[in-house]
Length: 421
Ligand code: GUN
Ligand code: FE
Image 1 (cartoon, rainbow, N blue to C red):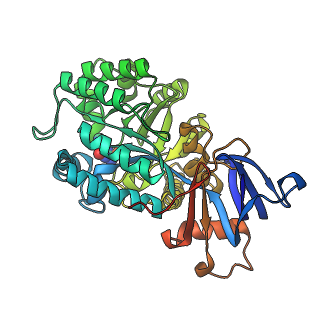
Image 2 (cartoon, rainbow, N blue to C red):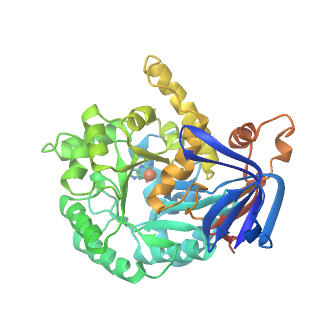
Image 3 (tube, helix red, strand yellow):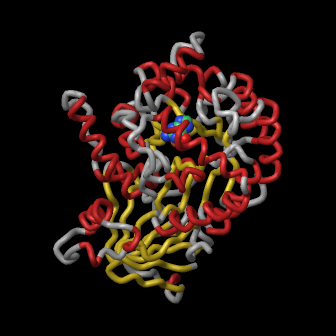
């Protein structure tokens, strides 16, 4: 058992922050026992890591990141999605057939995740099985919790970066068998890239693998207008992009659909009915001029929404930067909706980037008892005077104005993480 002592702040619900000033966050075997102003007598004598006036917050949860696009961060962001994929993304991802390259770049990514306080992440790898296993090894060694997906693509892809349907399904199953029980905090996830790049046979086969091995799934949905038009041309037999995935059995309570910028009320209703998670990636939606995602519509429909960096369409690794972008995006959405769809509050944005996305990983993203002790210590001394600001204001200031230098400690499941090497 041990305790972290400091100014504890988190969101048990999206409506408000819970604040415990100068208190003890107590864990046992990686799980939170409770928060105490003074340690009760039976806990006196446990190890205490005292962080003084620092903030203690839940670790960040990134629901969507393309690991082999890390080296492309910030490049080609004057393009739209489909051109950007052709020109920048597929050529870079194809390089991950080279295992040395994969190991070097994935290690750099793990360092940046560590630096920026991402404690749980759902990753897209490339189509390469070996590269995907290297990514799983690297992330596991870093102590970060992750779902990692070998990407599947068997149509409408460049000839240097494509698989046959049979090859794609066979290597995916071999990879699942090799990795599903190999790690404690890292698990495989089924990852069809998106409808344009996956045949019906492939998508249905992947849904079967998900069922057979009880695996989660992730893909992209309705990001860009040309993409949506293309899906409607490929699948006139379905009424919408969302219905295509539903027809392939890919929409479940264990599925993350990313983006969801342009969806009809009927599609939102279907997503709610299937109880999927949505990964909201406002940085990427701005960078590729995909559009302003109406997060409020999804929340009002009762849909679970988390945040994603969507590296490399997104350009910032820190989920705290995606939180502030989500609020900015919601303000534009408010204006565009005739001031009807309310902006996100800071507590809603923080919830999305912690407990909201964390639910995909289990009891993650909150400091309620029974949750995994995934925590960050934030020293905000350089960000301004601390005496005249509440704990909540200091957290807001870190989210908007802080950076990785303010994050001084990272814990996952109670374990202090050291910098990945
Ligand atoms: N849709 C299909 N593939 C991708 C990708 O790599 N990034 C983004 N942003 N959207 C996609
Ligand atoms: Fe993406």
